[in-house]
Amino acid sequence: MILRALCIVVIALGLAACNQEEAKTMPPPVKLDAAAMGVFCGMNVLEHPGPKGQIITASRIDPYWFTSVRDTVAFTLMPDQPRDIRAIYVSDMAVAPTWDAPGATNWIDARKAFFVIESRRRSGMETDEAVPFGNRAAAEAFVADNGGRIVGFDEIPKDYVLGGTTSDLSDRDPADIKTN
Image (cartoon, rainbow, N blue to C red; front, top):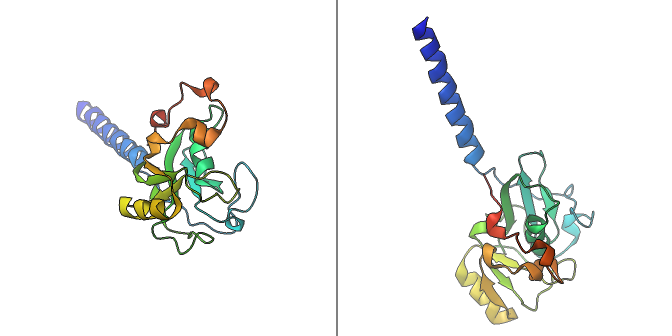
């Protein structure tokens, strides 16, 4: 009887450890296709030029899609949006075919990307954009051609992505967003 109880405890602990490992593993990005609709605009993501974003949460099967990286970052800062973020992916413009067609599968982890902000390039929604790159050299080449400056995900200014004043969000920091 004791041996049986001990076996059950060992199995339960093993399963719990597996579940924790699964929760820590970032799910892979989803291929961009014609079904992707922007969260904020409700428009087809493919109909807009420039880099895109997707956020995968634990509570939803499909990713949240964004017509711009700026909107992707803004989503993480808004207190009324889901907090169970498992992964944040953005287009890697270092390997994008063109600005107008940034690619369907060249996703990179937003937390590891190099972002060019304050450049002359506009997002697909004609707003300021945070242009992501998988390597610093590509970001530097983009800055040389388009102006701007290079920052990491946690360094993107709140007012750059949210606009106006952010006094009501002053306690919200991209670094505080936990991903599994």
